[in-house]
Amino acid sequence: MATIRKQIIRLLETQECDARMISQCLKIREKEVYEHMPHITRSAAAIKKRLMIIPAECNSCGYQFKDRTKAATPGRCPKCKKERIEPPRFKIR
Ligand SMILES: [Zn+2]
Image (cartoon, rainbow, N blue to C red; front, side, top):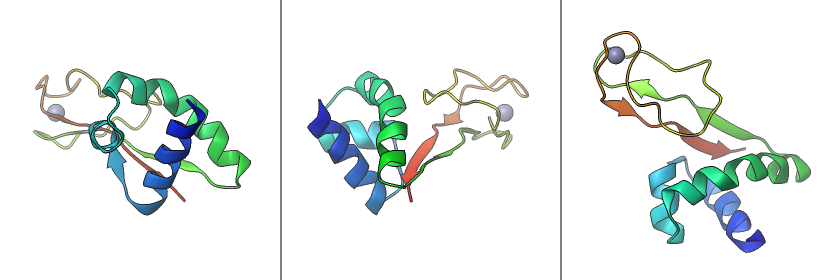
């Protein structure tokens, strides 16, 4: 468990990733990535770093889900109602 979190942190320190990329790199399910995220926030703070979340964005109209703090990708756009949502991306700096 702790090792996976360290690996996620190491990965996010070197590149910006969405949950799918993280799950593929570390061979875990995407759902697990979301479960680790709140802990990653704390672990990052412990080493004086910050988990940045680049908000999800609608591919159709460009709407940004800025006030959304959850890590999971929203289902559909509230503005144009389309379901082509670019997932949120994570980075540690
Ligand atoms: Zn939209």
